Length: 116
Length: 112
Image (cartoon, rainbow over all chains, first blue to last red; front, side, top):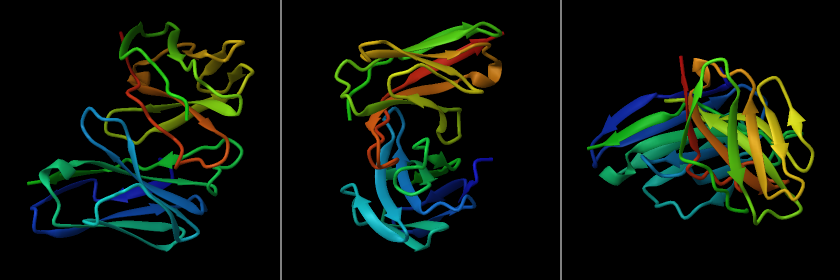
């Protein structure tokens, strides 16, 4: 249990569907992140939020739309995805952008997305 | 962030020490060495980090060479639960996540 909870753990969707991934952290952190992990590829940073404000968008296509209503919750809205978007989507949080004394990121267990 | 090179896979016998090497020959003076691991179907987990000195915590030890061009993560008594992909990352201090580049890592298999 890392203190970062992601739902759903598994999601299957068609290319015309609209769905959302949810992340919640119970660690009192202010910074939250979305990462994408495709098969046989390194982890890719997608978005960074600090105190609800987006500070980084790593050239992510607009079919991925993040939302951060408060410092504890982060959403990733998905629409008109492609099969190549199938991946493990990981949420992380940290104590500020520096990650505190240890510079540590805390990851959730991920949402496994399959796009048909 | 400096690039790292790790062997793609390693085996270790249960109860023995697992020594995972990492080369980071282009590391800069202000870059830290971080180790994370990812157990199957879970998110990455922080293990340890260091700048110049060797470090030890309840999970592992980190040995950094004097020239800082390589390091070794040591799991002193590997268990089956240590089977995972281990990532060596170098990054400057400051932003925790948006400068954390994960490479391919080393897949450690701990065998009975």
